[in-house]
Length: 349
Image (cartoon, rainbow, N blue to C red; front, side, top):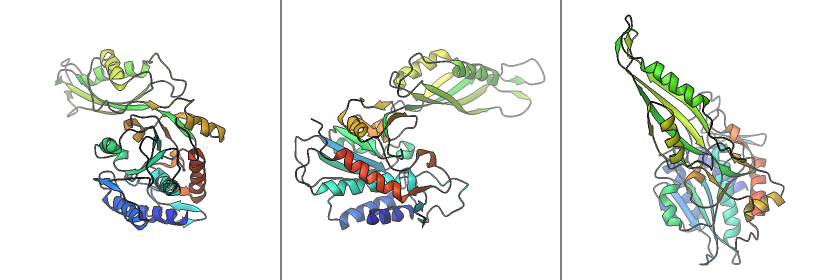
């Protein structure tokens, strides 16, 4: 795994913020070229098919992302310095999701030269995951073709996320009437917004998932007012909604729109909940290997992959987006072994 650790260090050393991943994409492509692997590209996305591809076999996608968030303000180390100390690799993107990215590439290369695989493999290093961007995974789905299974690499401590909550962001606006704050004039939009926020806070969606739990709504931003002596006629607030498999984002939006008086506008309805049956062969293989499974509250590229998928990878989600991000070298090595065990002789038909 040493060459893949070195690859991860190279990736950490360049800035790869969402929508500006060109340097990281170049590093991935140079590595593939150096390994005599023919790849395809679109914007900052790179993917490759196994050498002995056979039409008619099930297709498995190995996917992780090359982009990162901005460095957190609390960094005490250089976020672009890929230092290894006491078996720990530091740096922005090391945990989320560089560890999974290079480990899945190592797994792809392990199987790439095998002629008798019971499946075809695609490895895809994709962009804009952190911002659910239009030029990321979703943009190359047609190029990849029909998939029978996707393994999405994210830091999960190598446990299987077999379901993932959907994400919907709502921009809400309450309407009042302006007036002078010193007199009994106007209709305060802030008070109307507060009433709606209380309705959202107290509302419980009826259907609760065994894996993903209840639908969760959180008001995360609020803005109103122009000056101290003017009753505000507008108050805007943002609602972060995490849906389970019983409610599409469209259905959840309709319920919320009827629940409150404020105008409600969804930024997007496309990041719905995703999941895979517990009796799917990849899940059962994982269970037999001693892995646990769970429902994930966070979103990933699973949300835009319309095929059965699991999310699994080295590292710990709790370290993602934190200052002085890191991953243990041993986690990457364990991840490689688990991925290999999951895929060896896996039968999807």
